[in-house]
Image (cartoon, rainbow, N blue to C red):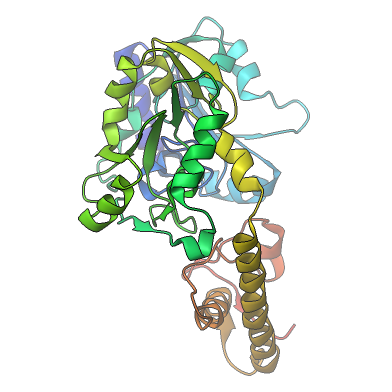
Length: 374
């Protein structure tokens, strides 16, 4: 199906006058890890690594990825006719260099999954707002819309009102601040969610003004009780996609990080723009005593779980049938025994023998290695 889907994309490109189409590993928020809806690169290439960019021309397809995934990509791209571009290896051009070699070509992409800075860097004639993946991916999963919940101040150590006050002071002469990075948003509003595996975030955008703040989320993600709590701090709930129209109406000066704000939002602005890192990036880098104590406690609990696991593994390996998945599941079970466990922060890398050469390996039930006492 991979070859057929690439051909379908190329057919759509011809119809729309696009010579080269870019499919990054990203969502509308420039997240490092993304939900199933946003895994278009995986769908079209078969490559499952967490980092990589698929570039399709009218005659070929190329996948750029880094050294963590060279072995995995070679295996997963076999038979697809997709050319593996090993980032950093001699003679391998960057995506920018590849596009510069095709400077007279028209480049297309979905303007919501590339940052404004990325698009500016490409410096080609561009077509945005073209989600060709959606036209080909017939059984595309829906966008995750898991419930958001309040993150209690006993865990974070600072109220959202205090955080908003600090942020407004840091905005200086800007009347508005657009935040699209999910970790910044949940930190600022003291909320959490589960829209991305191993990341307790809520798919959302935020617009901070001097007197109020707008949180853009999907329908029914914020329940009445949570909305009532947020309203106490002049936080307004609006529909997830309303931000694209709302930013068109902004006047004065707006602060944003164009490494994080997607091209479509940036392109909808007609007011003065100040580009700088989100102040919340600096704020949340300095942990308060509550956060420091919580981190220490989490490490102690995880250390207990890991110690129990190591004893179990050494006691049982070679005596009972084990594989990478059952071992990963057992470690997760020890962690879940600890109080206030919520989720793993990363897929467990349990890799035996040859699989240990795959730096970001994730064992799958149907193909994992059996583990012996060798």
